[in-house]
Image 1 (spheres, rainbow, N blue to C red):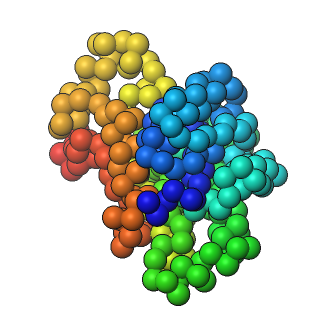
Image 2: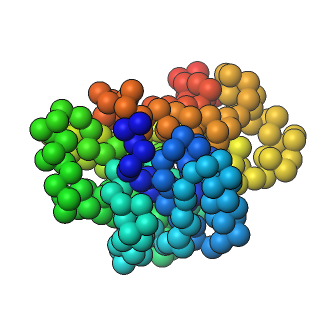
Length: 267
């Protein structure tokens, strides 16, 4: 398989969509370096599940807002697995719910540094790693992809909410980062795409998971009739990283059960 000798980095791989992606990639044969911020035990469990399935994985503590930590992440991944060609940016912080008059600069900056600066830093380091190995030039000559990047955005990149100034601004920026990089890197056969999930049953929606009444009330607004699962998002991302998605770049694929379309109905 084309991906067998190249590694994937998955940020936020200890929970939610990131965990589902790490497991899917590992089980599909990608060597996976996954990051975690605090929950080392959860990250170790993901690694063990990948290894039990016959895959290879490495868990590394990493604050994606820290430039030095990103360098350490890629150095460790490259030392363990060799070239990194695949990147999933899933690490992220949720909206604070704080209105602008009460929001501190530190709070606004905290979310942007994780949800927007983090993908910038990882994308830049992946490209630099390919350049050091002349991977991009060789791939252009061969007419194939040299790397594939998927950023986990949100329907809130274009569907804002009161109290979501920090998160929604970060995801809006991530949409433009994705599109701009797709243009910039296409001549070097580096594909850059994003997925925009709606309501997915992860820790970001823990209150709805814990409260059936809250979940039911929120699912009423979803035309498909239910919230999504992290594994469904991971399956989409796995496709976008695959050779079958060779010609897809610059796209943001919405996966929300048509939730974002209800804006047109005034819901």
